[in-house]
Image (cartoon, rainbow over all chains, first blue to last red; front, side, top):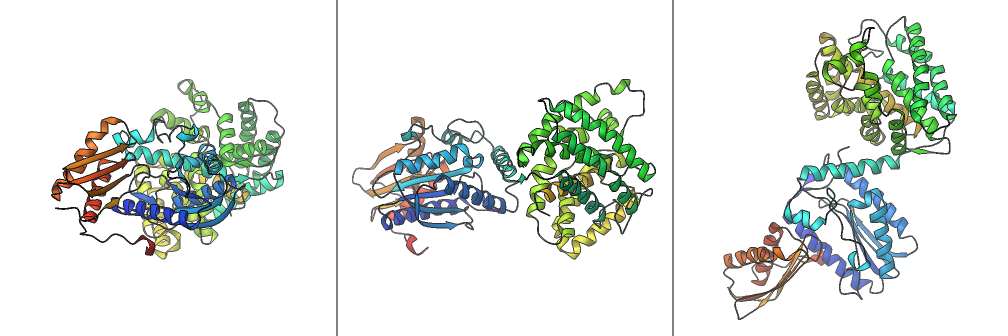
Length: 465
Length: 97
């Protein structure tokens, strides 16, 4: 997730002028509400970009948490300036004890993941100076990057802006994932969401190189009907994956994963029966299986957040890459595509994605899809091309014969969005053109499609599509 | 140049500096309070002195409350406060902004 995307840069004078504006606003409120405590709330963002759609979202989420922390105090005034180019900010006047209010806001700054990015100042007409953290026995705010005194780091310029952005993106990504909760659902609902994801993906068009109802892309051995047959053959597998994980007891989730894997091998055979030996959904069997299993396990006692789901998945798949690829050179049977690419390029592929908790799906594609607007088709096409921008698509690498193709994939994705994406005729025409080029060069983005399936599955479970 | 009126620029926020200029008769007299370690004191004075000399201000009392401002911030705040004190710029009317 890049929270600075589509942000606008401003110059130093705009920031400085705004500080004077804020200071005057505070003084005026102090006079206007002499018995109240003035709470001034803004974000602490280094660099020239102070506002962007996701920064505004983060602010609004944080504001909700701040109000929660302040709920024992009566709010007598509130005003927010979300659209300011200098960053969203706002003011509250609350009735209460100065110190108690400050302690409540410090609890937000300390406890909420996103509190780290907020700067909350507390003041009142009666007190000459703003109440500082230090005067209440808390240490000064620490640096986002190295945990030393933030003021010293800024003054000395010890960190790059880039590392500041990385730290902020990380904080926002974790926070957003904690906001998305998958509610407890029946086995049947989860199975149907998986089926929905498979059928939505194959129905979506125009997809570059992939099979859809309009074009078979760069695949001459399968059609949309092959995919329908394949999807339906996996119902039993999804049900079983749910059942074994829902009933799993024990602490070592790798054991749950091994059981799932045995089911997966059987599911591959079922798929091959249904498709007459064509690999339609091998990647989806792996990814969806893990997701279903983790959800069944994680929702045993109620909802599970995306952040927690990711932790369950990393526990299930810990050491997977090393274990699976340990003895490749001694393996007698023909290597799978994933094994071959690990041997050749050291690419951990789908196993690596699982072991790191499917970051493309969870950190990027799911929040993107949930926020997207338009028809189902438009939202899914944009999500597909968004995934294409950050994925190491091993299926594409296999077909192209070199990982260099990823540079091109990034460019295609960037061009698609530059043209306006699915919402413009130019974007759709571009996808059709790409499809033709993919066919001619015999390219496809099967890995990207698998990630879209996982994303749609999760979005369906949280009610986002 | 003579200071025409007492002026103030900047805020007491983190990473900012508040500078107040009042008429003086005894050269440039500093009254500096800083949040960051002492070693920055001289650097802060140097930056402010530089701006004052550019405007040819020779007699002034400079009250500085530094909250860990970067050098470019100190410079920008000094320029603003000098222009306000010399009455060569309108004070922003915040109540209408």
